[in-house]
Length: 167
Image 1: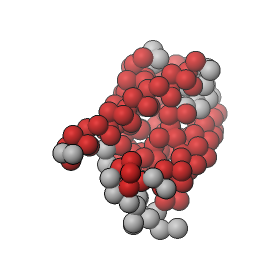
Image 2: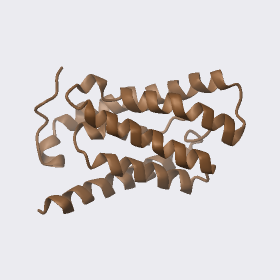
Image 3: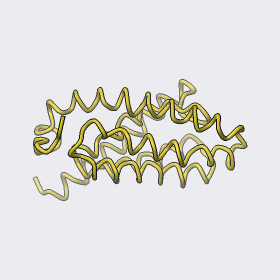
Image 4: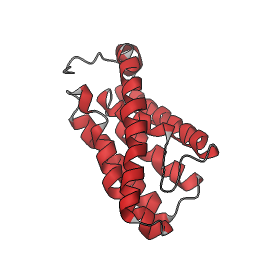
């Protein structure tokens, strides 16, 4: 299969999965505001396996935020936080235990001020705590479970085995 086609297919599937999983979390009241437990954030470990996850996660987050009716600053900066986390996860792909750290930190730093500015959720320090907890659960716990599961099938799913992972 053509590499560009495969790349775009992977990105599109990841974006679609992100949207579906965000809708699921949103239907349960978990995807928005101060406490955000988005199941879709587990997918932020996917840049460990493929660079196609970077645009896939960005577009998925952007579409999810649009579809759930997020405020404009949340749409912009939430999507940028996901993009930053994805790029940094790709850069750290040689260290699987660090894979969830970039999206956790990007969201923990960027999202609380957005919640304050866009939704007037106070106090700011509480948002730092709740967003970080949500990201640790989504990216750290669910994401690492996903990483270990997908690692067994990396060659089949992503076209090449993960050979540069440490640990």
